[in-house]
Structure formats: C-alpha cells, structure tokens
Length: 169
Image 1: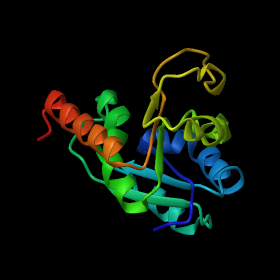
Image 2: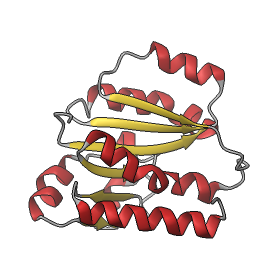
Image 3: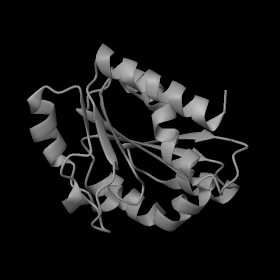
C-alpha cells in the first residue's frame, strides 16, 4: 500500500528516453511529487541505467525490460504501457494514468485528480486532452484507470489483445 493518489505510467525505449529524459526527470521531481511516476524502460543502455541510479527523486520509480522487438516497431513501444499496466496498478495499489513520455513533462494532470477521480468513472480515455498535447492533435495519449476490479479486467484484456496482435505470446 502506497500513500499516493495516482501512479503515472509511461514507457520509453532508449531513444525516447534520451530525447526526453531531462524534461521527464524535472517534471517528476518538481511537478508530480505527490504522485508516483513509474517509468518503464525498454532496452536501455548502460549509460541510461547509470544516470538513473544517480537521480534523487523519491516520486520516480523505474522498471527495465529487455525485448527482442526491433526499434522500428514503434507501435509495440507505444503499447507497452498497457502490457504492464495491470502489474503496475497491482504493485502500487493506486489509480493509474498512462501517458506518453513526450506528453508527460508538459501535461498538467491535476485535473485528472479533481475531475475524473471525483466523477467515479472506471476508465477515461481520449477526453478533451487537446490542451495537454504539444502538437495539438487528438489521440489517445492518456488513459485513467480507477483502482478496482473493473479496470484491472480492462487492462488484462487490453494486454491480451496487444499480445495477440503483436504476436508476442
């Protein structure tokens, strides 16, 4: 049991982590210190792992996965947060917000806590998130999952579907 209202989950491969690491680390340290920020890195370099060991940010938690997926499979990397979402929710026992690493630093998730959590909905995706996205388009870049059996079931089904489509067993 963790005393945090929300876990923010994002996943990145080595190139995305290198591109956005300064902004991610600054936002995790300064903006979202009352939340858990879980960064899942796929195929990180030794230098990235060494850098993360030096970071002093109590809100930031990092998991690492080695995968055989080529870096050209961007859909796999973009979907990987849904593959591990259930395990992350179970681990922290909090509500879960999944997002993209390139949106996280510029987003303002306070409205998730005040609006979506208070609404009582189990799942919220693709709402009016236009103001959160630096490129001003509308895609499912954030999904809120309430910490309950319904959301756990949704995450389990999403993971199974992604594994089926991506043929990753």
